[in-house]
Amino acid sequence: MRLPITKLLQLAVTLLACAFLLVPAIQSVLAGLTVNYFRGMSSGLTLKWLWKVWELYADSIFLSIWLALACLICTAIIGVPAAYALAKNPGWISRILEEFISLPLAVPGLAIALALLQLYGTLQGFRTSWSFILVGHVLYTLPFMVRSVLAVLAAIDLKSLEEGAATLGAGPFRRFCDIVVPNAMPGILAGALTVVTLSIGEFNLTWMLHTPYLKTLPVGLADSYASMRLEIASAYTLIFFIMIVPLLTAMQWASNRAQRISA
Amino acid sequence: MTLSLKNASKTYPDGTRALLPSNIEIETGEIVSLLGPSGCGKTTLLRIIAGLETPDDGTEVWFDKDNVTQLPVEKRKVGMVFQSYALFPNMSVSTNIAYGLKMQKRPRAEIEQRVEEVLTLCRLNPLANRAITALSGGQRQRVALARAFAPRPRLLLLDEPLSALDAALRDSLRDELSDLLRRLGITAIFVTHDQNEAMAIADRVAVMSEGRIEQIGSPEDLYRNAGSPFVAAFVGNAMCLGKVVQGNTLRLTGGELSLPDDAGGRGVYVRAEDVCIAEDGPLIGKVESVTFLGTHYRVGLSGVTDSTLYSLHSGLSAPRHGDEVKLRIAPEALMLLAEDKTYL
Image (cartoon, rainbow over all chains, first blue to last red; front, side, top):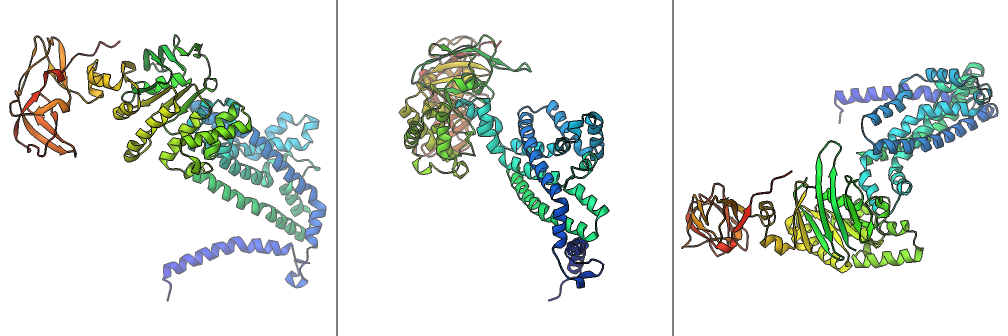
């Protein structure tokens, strides 16, 4: 059986597009595993570059993970109640506030970083601590948490559920803990994974805010590209891949689930 | 528990008067229905009792000897069944039912025992561990009732408890709900727009219209002694025959009708079951439509009054479309009602 020409064309375009994306990725992965990139695969495969990266940049990896978790905790503590307040009081003020929270998405990271530096750069202890980078990350990731939770809260009949709990004797705090949070969980989960993934991958802001002693994963990557052997930089990319791909997959799964609820 | 509402009213910020000052007293163990078309203020009244709506100043809500007007909803100890049921989707059937008891901080053993008791009472035992999403509409309704009842509320409030169900289920659940409420032996108020539902379940019915309570009485009383044209029309679908200026005769297009009393200035109303097709009747009408309803025919007649007059005709055969028939209405079946009082 012969494929019609249109199908063949579609297939060709798809394969080409895949190759365009995949070949450099594979090449980069292989570069991180070959003994000598300039002599090619014939020089043999090795894990020594990965080990080298670990020796040089383990701090960056831990800092990034730590920052991502701290960022998650902050966005959850600020974002979930914020989304709840926005969902409970719909109206033009809420709409404006929501846009305001989302502003860091539109403003370039560099500009936010510059503003932070101008405002707090002179506070020595703060400027040189990891919490300075954290503030930038929270600013940047908060809208993702708020919007994700807000979408789920808008989809459930929050008012009736809360009134139901109230008639059963639950005060405002209990209602938030027993009804709002568990029912918003798919949105919180989707938001959380987005926040962690974005925080680990964030470069713009972090590059401006970091100090030589505080390099996150992407900042370390830029550093290794600029000052290390190509093999080490490639091995670094590989480590980055290994960390971020499972997160991305989980994020996709969680946001699909949240969308099914809000649909 | 005795409930009394004094001067209860609600005005929305945009000036809409959802409820005009109303008074109502409900005795212990009584089941009262608030009946009326949508927008008549019945749900607002229920929500004021529950504490979910802030009423206008001057409103007083008394539970026995406690003035609860300023008490927030979570402290009023009322059980409420919502129109949408508002069951917590993150909890199972028994956790939903236990929630109110947990809020009262009862010991665990007591909670378990009470949940078991209520599950049995509402015949929900086999569903105890189900997720809410795995229940049918009728089951959800019973869980909602069980959840509201479990913490031993002082008062049970039901907001259109059957309206989310389909028609066939609604009829069977109506009797079940009536039976269940009596077995629970609790003071209950329920809101409905369906007169059959109100009649079937309630000891007393409060008919509401445009933010006012028009009349309160037992179902029989409302049906037989409607106090206003609105009540007569809403409870039992009375039809207006016409208005009498003076005297005790009503002149209609289809003939003359003698009235039991001097009806000067009042309207004359009649129900379809009291309009009889009879050889010797004084009125003449023309058959416009015939609907077979199993136990009887519903015959639409033109030419008697300005609008179509309906007659419920029992018998093995019905007149045919286009026939001229004679009608008789017993004088005692006629309701003479003064036009609606002037509204504020």
